[in-house]
Length: 358
Image (tube, rainbow, N blue to C red; front, side, top):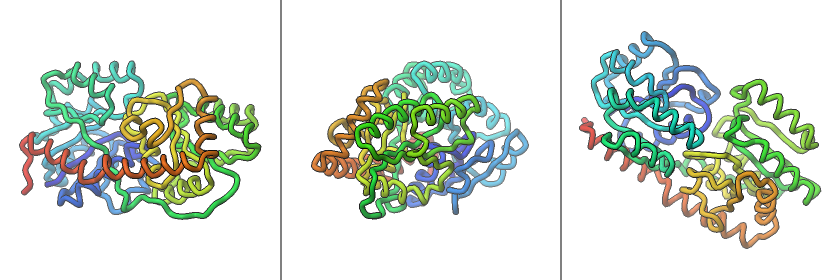
């Protein structure tokens, strides 16, 4: 059995999700490949994984004809559903919902996708984010709908002891754009620095994807808050190096602060949990599957950087709370984000759609 996944660009959470899916399916004897329309920073992470990059009908025809795929997963770009059918692909096509942002934008995008999905897709696949599940049920009441667990490979991504260091580090992972809410992170960082007197901020993301006006605003805010000397910016860090960084944050006594307005899956949160790094996060929809307030992390009220700062400080100043949160988070990661759980659900969906192992 061979599956093709199709998306726009190998970057951020989607590229991470695709890698974990590849490993999960491979361990179950299923081959998969990935097609992206444009190159991206995540290409360097896909070592040993079949990846095609190119745009346009001729390129897509060659990819579809290069091997006999038993099913195709088209993520986000609903306009391409018609294209693959026009190119003669007659096997099951699954439309996957990812990256639609806020509730309002998700509704807008899914409404635009309705006709394409009705006409060309055999099923709809969503992450375990309640707002996306509810919208998908509303817009496609008669289309087979599958809520897919999120896989995380703890064999490949795990804690690497670094030893205690000073000062404490607070980390952030995301793009410099509105939904990731970088401004709130900087404001919270300023408050933590005011309280502690010494702090390192580490920010990880793909700065090349930030629109120029937003990038300029970011640097202006960084300087205006006096955080420049305390902030380290890391763009396009290879994923194999991230366990070292997050383990360093953990061993410094710091935390990951996730400030997104809306998430379907925040892999940065899962990666922190894998590295024994405690998490403070906004109470955004998709994060609730991993972070349970007071047990596997701490919530703060979106729009309140002061509350975010106080939550981070609680984890920095209360060793017993920190230990409890770290242990519970790791346990939840193992139980709810296992490769086996994802593989069983994905193969169950394929079986429902008539795809059988050869």
